[in-house]
Image (cartoon, rainbow, N blue to C red):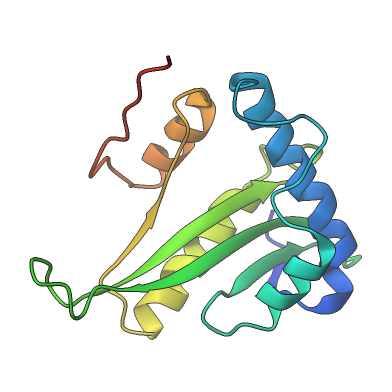
Length: 159
């Protein structure tokens, strides 16, 4: 989709982002109903407004030519300076990424991810990371197609 605009989110985007937050939560709720509650969202509108105002937590949104919000990428600055055993590098962590279910397969996610990479390079980050749920193999496959690779595993034993 070449007619996308990718920009920082603003307060006018809150309603559309809330709907996408519900969509991504429901994907997780279908894969892990023991952890996620279907129909809920990760943030409230008030919390989302606070994140939008926080420069250390940029949210990028992709809109089409009609200004319809098609996707987002929530990012967080992680600075490892001061940790005794870690190199003093900055990581741009993608806390959440979602493309509207009606826009999937149109390269919106790829363009959002490319924008995040460009932002990270321009701001001196060492790497870009994210977590993917094992219950969402389509997402894992998508991230691998973008050039991402596993750098650690999270493991569990359900009791």
